[in-house]
Image (cartoon, rainbow, N blue to C red; front, side, top):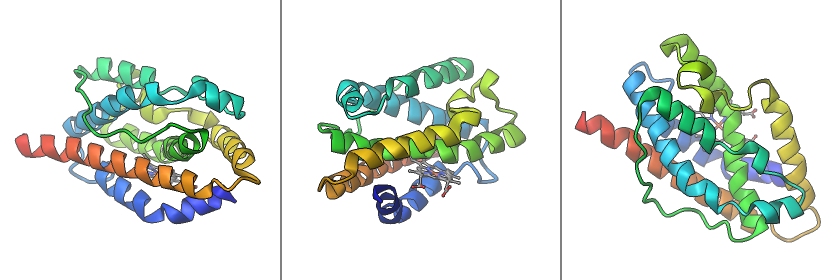
Length: 192
Ligand code: HEM
């Protein structure tokens, strides 16, 4: 139930973030890809340490096996990027409900990541070996990983009155990512 609510309540925001990421654009080239990876790298470097891993584990979900920063670090090295500080206001992850809502966005993005990963391979020959690990993500495990997340968040939300807190946190997370990634990708584009 909570997954259906989240999907419906954030549909418009998904369209916005897709427009900000914009990898399907004909003009999307290697420089644009580097800006995109740089943007996500700086975001995750600020965001992932805030995830209340123990609290989530107690609530039946293990994020430790899903960390994405090491993938971005390897991509950044392969692409020759330098870490930039992310000065965007991070979402509040101060309760299990908020963390689950926020992670809905993070884990859901791995679904789109599969589409992006295939596109990157076809258009820019980017693979996990040369800077595409983050988008390759869980690879063939993406479906099962998403299903497992869905079961965890559903079990957590079931019978509690936390839906609004979960949805608000997902919305806040979409907003930060859209704003930050949009700023990183278009700001660099105008300097260029
Ligand atoms: C060009 C970029 C993107 C494309 C093409 C894309 C595409 C997709 C696709 C195909 C799905 C699966 C839909 C389904 O099975 O019903 C999906 C789901 C999702 N994506 Fe994206 N996505 C993109 C970027 C993002 C980003 C950057 C985020 C968040 C940071 C995001 C968050 C989500 C979420 C939360 C879901 C799960 C929706 C649900 O079933 O509840 N996506 N996306």
